Image 1 (cartoon, helix red, strand yellow):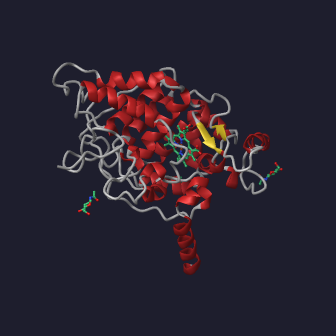
Image 2 (spheres, helix red, strand yellow):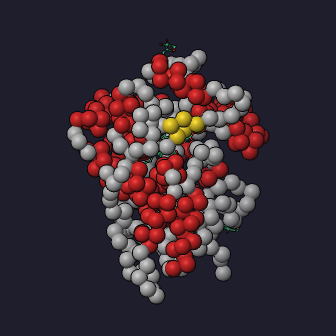
Image 3 (cartoon, helix red, strand yellow):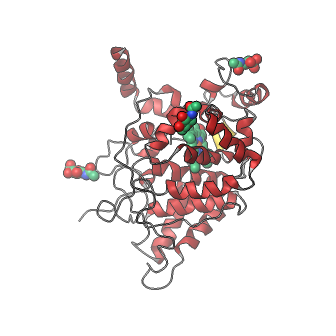
Length: 352
Ligand code: HEM
Ligand SMILES: *[C@@H]1O[C@H](CO)[C@@H](O)[C@H](O)[C@H]1NC(C)=O
Ligand SMILES: *[C@@H]1O[C@H](CO)[C@@H](O)[C@H](O)[C@H]1NC(C)=O
Ligand SMILES: *[C@@H]1O[C@H](CO)[C@@H](O)[C@H](O)[C@H]1NC(C)=O
């Protein structure tokens, strides 16, 4: 047992960046989740309207600048921005570490954005860059990249829900200086996770089971690469409870004339670009992509919440989603002592 595990690890160490290109979770040995340092209580030092009086020369509406850039992009990028926030917060807390192009101290180490869960699927980076550039020009050195990511996720939720999801996002985060691909798989739940693993991995971040169920509703927007679900969800290895007709549709879409092409499909076949409670109807209809989506019906309490979100109480899910996004935005926050306000979101500031 131990030797075969070691052999697997050694194999992946050898394959390194080569297998990284192939993408997909299933090529990787999945390590046991690490328990991170105790998460900071959600939202500790954050404030709504934090940037209101932060720019010295003149009044600059920082949040409006972010909103403008998010509005200008397409629905796919907006979905990407919602996911970017989740992936930032779950690895080293909400500190913009997902945005760094290098772990500048040691360029031989790959940053988070090239970790298996993020590359090549994660998107929205250019929207953050554009917002940051405009903000820096108007109000240099004051606004963290971590806050821009949080605002952008909030604004993307707003536009994709046609205003149905609308909330204040507290701010005052600081940017981190470390970003490591090796920390992505242990901290980000994989699509083949079952209910208990999902609860555990969200619990490690200070989020409870209902936060997990609520935030999973973000799978009512955006896309997935076929490599993220084919292996455990589609025939011939179908041990899943997926609707057979839906599975057949996915198979057809995932089959490519070009062998080796990792096609994409929409998360929500019904209303792919609308952030709404349709996801929960899809879960109940067995028309969802991931094991982690289908898992929400495998626990009695969870199944009841899914049903409530699907149709029982109008706008219940939207309200809970707003609260859960704010709570997620409070994971393991940095302070002025262990963080910084980056000048460029892709690199840490120069040390003097
Ligand atoms: C519960 C555990 C979760 C798992 C296992 C999971 C897994 C995944 C996977 C595998 C993809 C497809 C990536 C690809 O192949 O292109 C995806 C897409 C997505 N996820 Fe999740 N996710 C989870 C929770 C969340 C949460 C909490 C959010 C945000 C609140 C979120 C937002 C999204 C969005 C918006 C997309 C579409 C991204 C795009 O179109 O670019 N997910 N997720
Ligand atoms: C960067 O490298 C220096 C020298 O090797 C080391 O002392 C420092 O702790 C490193 N910083 C980080 C953030 O790892
Ligand atoms: C596997 O797929 C076949 C063909 O679509 C279907 O008849 C069967 O019920 C599926 N098995 C499971 C366990 O879902
Ligand atoms: C359902 O999940 C909750 C939260 O993890 C847990 O407390 C409860 O025991 C689970 N119920 C069953 C029947 O497993």
